[in-house]
Structures are given as structure tokens and as C-alpha cells.
Image (cartoon, rainbow, N blue to C red):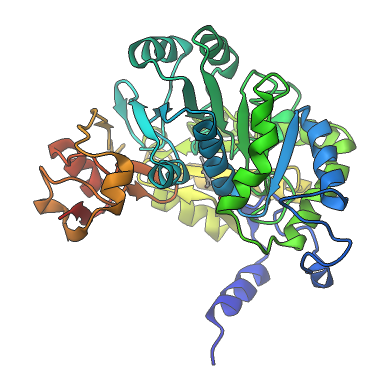
Length: 441
Ligand SMILES: Cc1ncc(COP(=O)(O)O)c(C=O)c1O
């Protein structure tokens, strides 16, 4: 029998590419497979810990300065379902959420019957994952909807960051809980300025440790603030267990445990990586590349504004041995971490230097669109579980979407279960090459 996955991985690792994609360990940690055990005597239980797992999670809670930090071996996706379920446990069934939410949030709402009041971005967008929301936007939306919880993504996939401090103050004014999808920002606790959502006033947040820290894929945290309802901490383990596997990976838990030691050594490696990335960002700017990321460890080249096609940039980087995280028609995303070496940085500088000759050669192709509020005719949950059929997007105007349609990555919705497909969403679906949708029968 052939082994296509193993073959791909072998061939990729043999190329020794500079990895500017997840996970944050960049292939530079080693994992002893004999650590892959199950919950044997003495190894504790992830969902009722009292031994080694409890101790390790307490260490993480100290590092992140939280009331409670829970490990997930199933990514932020599990933490997001847990956060939405914890709100339901305290009687909150309706949330205010920015439209650029990850699919795991919408899945949580479908499973739990939670309703969403969507906040749409203003003006033209060049990418579905972008969403710039101010404290004032949140203030107005909370006043209009009466929601008692807000769910926002920061940083987003392209590196935009919200003013969590100001938004938190607004949420407190409205007595609304603030949940942050910080999947891309675990490292923000350790950069020169502590920009972690819990520090800035969020009640709960998820961090995909694996995206930006030297942790195995799947390793994530659910953080609960010291300043929020104690009940969230009390209920969190049992609520998380409802959605989780009963066989959590000890390899992932071991990598979360060992990263505690790495993080406890101080901020030096983070500050150094931040400085190196900043120097790289400045160099790209001097060459004429337009970087739109506000994140310290992420570079997002706006290819349209830089005058180069995304395809050409990705190809040039690959010819120089550099693998990017993501590219679409208007942007190329590069994710750095403390595990990128000086040699990696030298190769990245050299690659961009040799790529700069293509700048300005491509027509700046604009793919801007506007997201207009869609009418919901059914709840997310009802439409998701309704009898459905797949039809060509072309014939879908006026039909109710059953299965949320996202662009993946970044797994952000164009149209959500329960919403009526209109002309504008049809245009956006086509722009992203989506030609079939599932609609309620
Ligand atoms: C913004 C955002 N939130 C949540 C997730 C889910 O994270 P995980 O893969 O750790 O489950 C992702 C994954 O890419 C993401 O980009």
C-alpha cells in the first residue's frame, strides 16, 4: 500500500524550507513517541485533574495570570465551543459577534442553539477575514441589541488587532461579558508590551498555543480571567469534556507542559524575535512591499497594493525555499515565531530582495467587495439541522442557507446557516470560487 501522507511529509521536510506557517515550533522541537500514553494510573485525567495535569495547568495559569487556564489537545476549536457553552450555562443564549468569526464559533452556536447578532464591517473589504471594529461600534451595537456577551476575533487571520482595552471598558459599562478568539495571539503575553486579551480586560479567551508557540498542533488554552464570574472556572472542565475526546494526547499535553518552562525563562526570545521581525517589516517597506499586519510576528503583504500578484510572490518565495502560511488574491500571510533562526531571517531578507524586482509589474487587481447584512429566516441551529440539498450557487438566490459557507482558510463565513442568499452574497461566493451551496429543502 502506498503512504501518500508520509511521502508528502518526507519530501517537504527534506526541502528544509523556512517555515513561515503554523505550527509555531517550525519543525524544531523533538517529540519522544514513547511519551504517547493514555490516562494510566498516575497520569491524571484531563477533565478531572488532580495530579500532574492539574499542576501543569496551574503553572500555565501563573504564566498567563488567569483564574484558570485549561489545556485543550483539540485546538482553540474546542475552547470556543466551551466558551459559548459556559455562557449558555449562565443563561446567555444570544451574543453579539463580529462577522469575521471562525467556523468553530458558528458550529458552537449551531450545536447549542445560541443566537448571534452580527456586527458587519464598514466600507469595502479586500478579504473576508478582515474586520475592524471600534469600541464605539461595540457600544452602539450593545445598546441596540441588549446582548449580554460579545465575541470578537483579535488578532484576525491577516494580523489586524482590535483595541481590546477600550472594548472591554465598553462591555463592562453594559455588564456584558467579553470573549476573545485569540487563536493567533498566545505569544502576545510575552512580547515587549503585554497585549494578551486577558491582561487587557477580556473575561475569557482561547489561544491556539500551537499556532505561535513551540507547541504541537492541537495544543491550545482556554483562559478565564481573575476578574470574571467564578462560576465559569467552576464549570469549565465539565463543560469542555462534553465536546472533547476521551483520549487526549499526552504528546500535546507534554508540549504544553514543556512550553511552560520555555515561557518561564522570560521574554528575551520573544523580544528578540519581535525586533528581528520589525527590522524585516521595515526592510520590506523600504523595498516597496505593503505590509498590512499590525501583529508583531505576522507579515501580511497586500499584493494588490504592492503591485505584485499573490501567485508570483508565493512562487518567488518558494523558489527561495520559503513556505508561506496563506495566500489569496489580495494578500500573502507569513507567520514568524521565536523558533525562526537567524539563518531563517537571512534567507527571508535575501528572498524578498530578489523578489522586489517584480514589484509594480503586475496590474493592481482590486477585488474589493462590501459585506451587507443578510436576512436570517431561521436560527443557525434550526437551519443547520434542517433537511437540505446541495444546489449550484447560481440558483441559490432567495434560498435559506443550511450549511454555513466559509472560505477556508481562514474559515470565516460568507453566508451563515439560516440566512437568505442574496445577490451580494452570490457575488462574494463566486469571487471565492464557491459554486455549490447547501440550502434548506
Ligand atoms: C481566528 C481563528 N480562530 C480559531 C481557529 C481554530 O483554531 P484551532 O485550529 O486551534 O482549533 C483558527 C484556526 O485557524 C483561527 O484562524
